[in-house]
Length: 115
Image 1 (cartoon, rainbow, N blue to C red):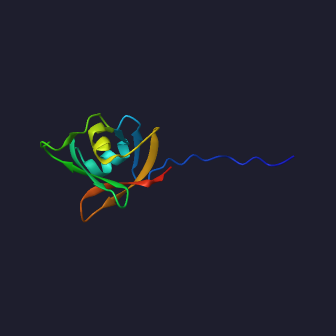
Image 2 (cartoon, rainbow, N blue to C red; image 1 turned 30 degrees about the vertical axis):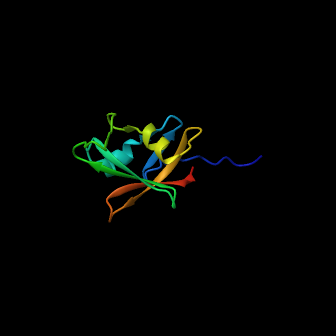
Image 3 (cartoon, helix red, strand yellow; image 1 turned 90 degrees about the vertical axis):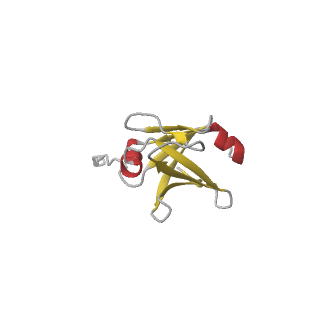
C-alpha cells in the first residue's frame, strides 16, 4: 500500500488576479485592490492593441472618460463600451494574472496570458 502525502494549501498571494466576464465586466480581487488601487474608486482604461493588453490607471476622482470602481474589498469595473470600442471579444469568464507597470503606474492585463 502506498504512502499518503498531506496536501498543504497555499493561497495565491503573488501577483494580483483579475477576471473578465463576457459582458465586459472586470473583476479585481481584494489582493489586487489592496496592492494597487489603494482606496481609489475610479479608473481610466487603456488598450494596447498590438500587445493585446489592457491598462488600468487608478485615479482619485472620476473624470468624463473614467470608470467607477465599485465593490467593497474587491473591485468591479463595468466596461462593456470599452470592450466594444476596441473589439475585444471575451466569450466566457476568463482569469488573468496582472503585472504592475511602475513607470506608467498602471495595472496591466495581458489578454494573451489567461489562466
